[in-house]
Structures are given as structure tokens and as C-alpha cells.
Image 1 (spheres, rainbow, N blue to C red):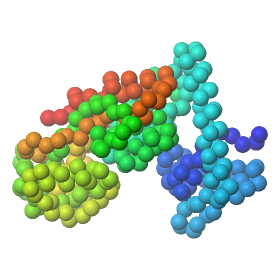
Image 2 (image 1 turned 120 degrees about the horizontal axis):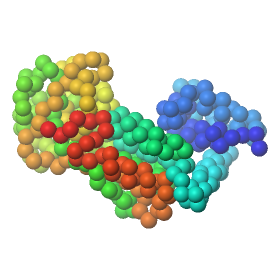
Image 3 (image 1 turned 120 degrees about the vertical axis):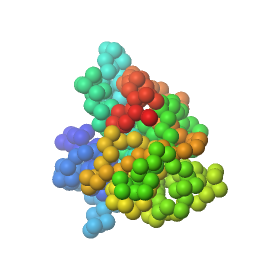
Image 4 (image 1 turned 45 degrees about the vertical axis):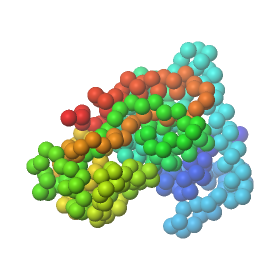
Length: 308
């Protein structure tokens, strides 16, 4: 056999992502490395796995679709060897696939994973950031082992352990006329231009905050990237609502945002760990879940300011 498990992993990632670039971002591996792995597999197996579309990504050929399923099985079987060995020798080792809500990942994931790997150097963690619906579907398909996400419309079959509550707050630029306020109400915000974080399910959460008070937000722009939302707010385009509390008050362009308490009683978003109900949890997964519960709580969340 002249191909490796790593090459199969790169092939699977590209097949699922539909492009070399997205697979590269998902695995934190250079695009040339993934392209080389796919080319090697095609040469070794004497098949064409993908059809390359200029500037439009990849699509699997018929044989590529068949081999993708087989590659998944090979990878799963190889990973199970680690689980069997770990349980037999009482070691924590193996591969873990962890999905994280995209709005939480930049703050929580680096510290959480680094500290866990420091304690358990024989572990490898595949980190995937995406929106809530995608994470839940990946859990249901057993493509990821666990997800750190919110308690948003979780379907039957998903087990959710709550860890910390994140009440909503307001962010404005430092020159905004609300910037010196300690609190502001939804009624005061309704007429103001809003930069709306437009992600699946999250969007309904923010709309519901206004609807419960019979209000309609004045949405100036809909943006699916939290970093872009903060930068637009910092540049004075309008305000936004958020639940996360980054330690830095700077947007990516260096301009400052100001966090203001939202007055009234509002449903918080709850961070938790989701797993597939009824799934047998490996020793590695159990250890990771326990570690998450010790590190994430209402009093302390990696990468976030404490609740004031």
C-alpha cells in the first residue's frame, strides 16, 4: 500500500468541503499539501477523484463518491485502534473531532485545545468551526465526536450539557451617542441602524428579543461574520447585539467597540457540549467532556471577559 491515512484524511476533507481552500481552512493545512495528497491518491489508484472547476471548487466523480465512503470507513477503523489500545492500557490517546460554534471558536478553542493537548500529548484534535445547524447535522452523521455550541433548537437524539450562560448585550463605537451609557433598552435601539449577525438559528434568537417587546429592529446590514460585524460597528455604521464577550475591545482594524448592558430580562444563549445520544463514549471523549466542564462556567470562559 503506497498511500497513507493522512492522504485519505485530506481527500475526505476536500470531498466534504467541496474545495481545496475550504479543506485547508478546516484542517489548518496548506492548500498545496492537500492538492499533492489528492494527486498522489489519483495516481496510485489510477482514478480521477474530482472534477476541477475553475474558481468554483471541486465536485466528486462517481468513483470519487464511492471511494470517499470507503476512505471514511478506513479512517474510522484506524482511529478505533487507538480507542481499543487506550482502554486496554488506561491511556488517553487517539483522534478527536471537535466542532465549535463559529462565533465561539476564536475565543474558546485555542486555549481549550492547547491545554488539553498539553495534559494529553498522545491525543490529536481535529478542530472544526461552523454554524449551529451544520454542527448538529455532523453530530447526527457521526462525522464529529462532540460540539461546543448553543442550546438553539436541538433536535431529538442530541444530548446537551449546559456549561455557561451568555446574556445579550449591546456593542457600539466609542463615538456613538450611547457609548457613555451604562444600560440601554431595546426600545431605544429599535430606531437605530443595526448591524445584524445573520447566522442560521442565531438570527431567530436576535429577532425574538425584539418581537417579545413588539418591536422591529432597523437592520442596516446583515453580516454572517462576527469579526466583520464588530469592525462595522467600530467604524460607526450602527450598533449590534452580541452574546460573546471577547477580552479585547478592538475590532480587527484596530478601532474600539464599547460594550453596554442591555436593560430588561432577556433569554441568554447557553454554551454547552453536545454529543450524539446513546453513542458509546470513548475514554478520550469522556476526558475531553470532563475537561470542558472544568474550564467553561458562568464565572470563567476561555478568551472572554467575566460577566459584569
